Image (cartoon, rainbow, N blue to C red; front, side, top):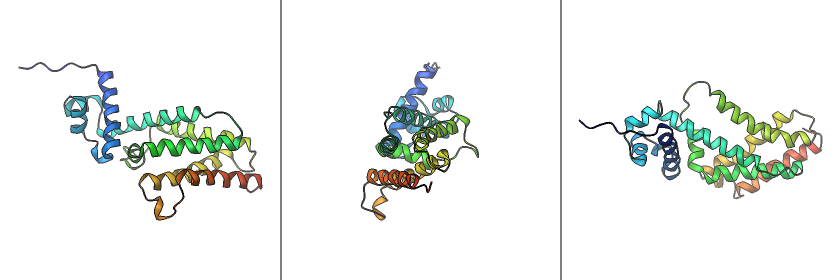
Length: 196
């Protein structure tokens, strides 16, 4: 009888997440299967399920790493004027998501595992919004900087959502980055005019 193959749990788990990202980038969410992952890391589908409770759990880990990577890029934006910082943050978000279109699709179009998102997931999103709210607050708006940051993120995200699925051209010929810049400029203009 053959002996079970031994593996380093943490190392194989990390390799599996990297392989999942590659599969998503190459073939989108439908390419992410236990069989494809097992083939990519040279193991069995059963081993994949020993590492992760489900394929949704694999996808959730890919999403966690994407949020961590995005946070690091956002944190690398220089602390300049509020306007320049908001423009740079929009650029980071647009570039990050469009450079990883299929991972983005899995992030936002993938199956919802439960009715409630895990605390770490919500904390990552909250951290992103807080990073946007800082330069918004420096503009001294009449409204709540947090709510304005949420609105700005949703505006830029909507642009990215259409661009990522190659449907932006149904509405406009403008480039995603130009539209993101315009969203930032509109918010700043509204704040400066006392409307926000």
